[in-house]
Length: 289
Length: 276
Image (cartoon, rainbow over all chains, first blue to last red; front, side):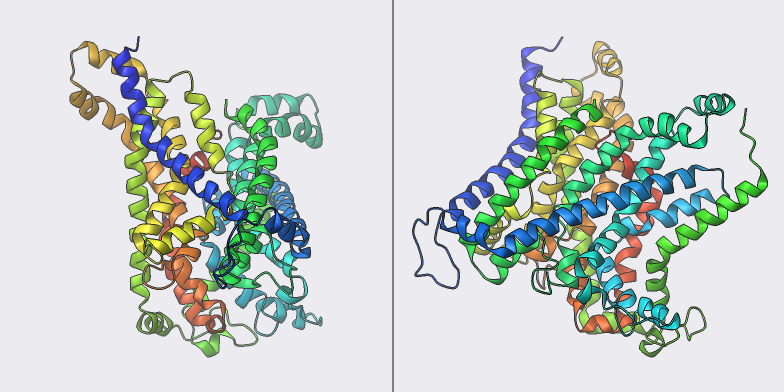
């Protein structure tokens, strides 16, 4: 049994982590909330005082906000769809008896280990560049007009880059989960004449359920915060075409120095993330038990 | 009984898997190859795969023009430093939650996880202003602390899942035998805890090395790690493919190697122990 002394020692050991995280969350968040109700622009020090909801109406009324919100949803949804579906397929393939499985695994997970600014720039310059990029060369040699990816389809291009970074993550997690599948059960199903599809549908997919939930949760956390890939490729453009919420708030704050407006945007982003989190945490709470 | 698989099927699957793997790995392979080319070979059309004059010229130029090594050093200091401080804070917490769970331990853990859900832009402005006021912008200490804080929930969780696997009975037995706290830690706990701590450290170094929101926003020159340094190639230097590739190859090589050796820990750490 834990004594009183042991219990207070335990609390003391947890305290630094809790206090640090609490301070990290609450202090800046409170400041953001405070700024969001202030007239505060670093370029114009004469503007001060209480602003009421002006910053919010300004931010929410900006057409850029709705575009950014929609882009955020497309980016998160698109990358999730590609990586989860692709990850399942790839994990099933690598799990087959093949030669050189270890090397295949190593090659497949590599993109996840590349820092975002490197992946984005390599794709932007060496693959997607309309004059010197490899894709342009491939298009030309097949007799097509090369596409200027980041100018013509900026958001889709960013989705492709980010999906490339996260496909390895989904594959690795799903493969790990797949390898803990009971092979006897699979053989029994096979003997009983279950088709490949029904084995997948009724044995494999239910087994992967938990891993898929985890992949969606973790990826969503990171995908809502995609920033570097946009900064070094399109700067959110052309117009707002590839601006997500994170990038919009960044540009208001550090490019236009509108602290009040950016803070309102930050609070809106926090609220939206919490709505998403509410749904996800329910699923994940079960998965972590 | 091993499943019997026809050789044809195995060959087809192998070819398919290798084909896809090479396509996925191709951008990295291409970057590495290009880093050994001259600028002229790098943009040659048709592209040259292996038949070019291999040279280390780009590596030398990247270093001499931009003091590459100082940024590399910044990355090392920030990644290792934030990991070390994070472990220092997290080990006692994870330890006590694993061995002395209180009624609220589960809630505290879930709350820590939920702090990861907060979008970075929600706190970007205050952090930026505070950093400006206290002269922490573009300082290694500042970024180090921020990266420690954003990864702290992952460190605590991961350590917690490892520590929970250490049987508590062993602790009890050592205590019965009259081992003092220090002996208990040194002879009983440390040997069992070290592998988990090492895996956690490894994952955190990878995450901190590649972190590209706070490093980009809080550093510009002196404290800039490789993420920020490479971002500087966005234009127009990025069109010098050989130099971009050389800088990129050096930036990703250490983590590629670390990551390949720690695939299992990666899975476990990133899923908060839910998938092992």
